[in-house]
Image (tube, rainbow, N blue to C red; front, side):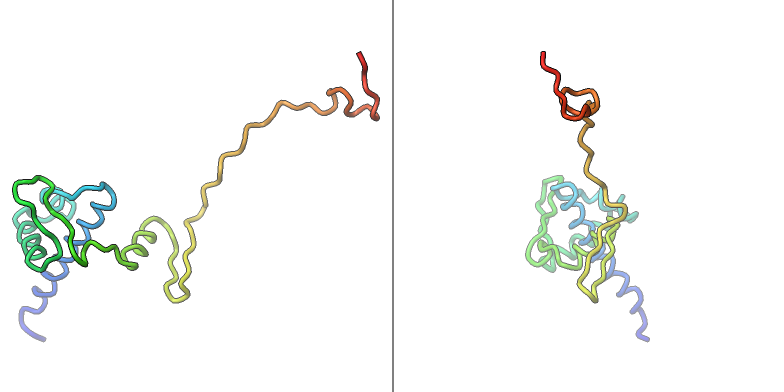
Length: 138
């Protein structure tokens, strides 16, 4: 095994974990996260997040807008939400995903629609009903 390969692998996966965090934050909130929010969400130092965001910027996956608090913009291929991202999101929300069969099963129990309110209806008392067809004329 190459010396230092473990740290290289960890750095690569951390970078893509940051990218995934940014994507999910965009998806959930409609705005980019701050570097402080990424650091808090990933339990890493803000300095580490700054370095990882710089790497993503240099690779063309994000663009940093300097002077703007929420200045991390997804660009290029990072802006697309892949099929795998979508399937993972569904799994996180309780769906069963069978990739081999291309099958999705919604979470159980499926929330049912609300029932319509019951009507006040007493069939034996209403006029013309329940008395052999005899109608009361009045």
